Length: 395
Image 1 (cartoon, one colour):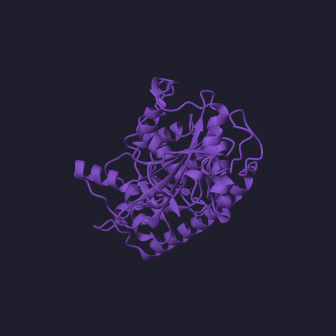
Image 2 (image 1 turned 180 degrees about the vertical axis):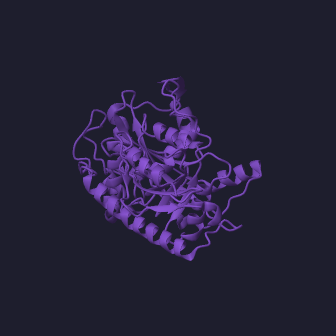
Image 3 (image 1 turned 60 degrees about the vertical axis):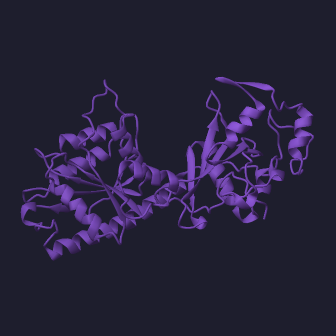
């Protein structure tokens, strides 16, 4: 389970930061905590919209990907800090990542009350229209007289406090599970996908058997498809068919195109199936997607298409760890849309990220700490490695 911990202060010395760092290290067996800062986020000004700037979008994406949020707030003049209030303004102006997100409030202050009044005010803000977070009721953690509570290694020294904090965090984990189950039930069921392509769309080439091994040749003859050195005018360029093939074949990834009718129409054929990251064979082109995957994975295939067609996700990523420790292969299923925003199918691109990461580290002199997270989102439902539109060899 993954949480985001928001430091509610932009001060260089913050006991609320210390508290979140303690929670991150002390209770890592309960959850993974990503502690994030607010000091780089500008003050809210609706006349100078900065919603799409990197600091705000990074926080937005982290909250969206998390199972829950823990906010550690100081108390300034009986309320939360101006910096935290400003962040919450940005997160309820044009974006709403906290909507229906489970939130827990903790706080530390120099005085006996332990930020109690700030926490009460923060609960009211989080319940406001536009924010609509789901705050865990009761179970307040109020850490007063913080200068006396941490040792020189930033560890809480009182065993009863540590024990109480663990109990509150365990309840929050249960609360998150409950909220996420309830929210999942609220989602309207998406329409079923026709993976066998029993209907047609305006671009369907009719009167050609989709399962035919030579579908490409038959379909090309049917519509008098151009080839070779015939020029094709694109939205910003003119290329011959041969140039387009060369261009697509040079891409450092495996590409697959499936249309919005769930028919597999193209892959950049440069290798034989046994040498590919996701094995495909020429005879599969033209097939309904149901014929391109094992029967056991069709539910996963349908789930991915439903997410992309409905707009619930623009891209679904799945790490496939079966290629060995020297590779980090990711299947990316990207929704395609026309100029009017209509869903037009799936662009699946598969690549090994490891050479890119290695090159980046070499160029910057940086290094990775810990292991790369193989997930594509917090507690994303496991729909299997065959979860996309890509045409794996027939089972």
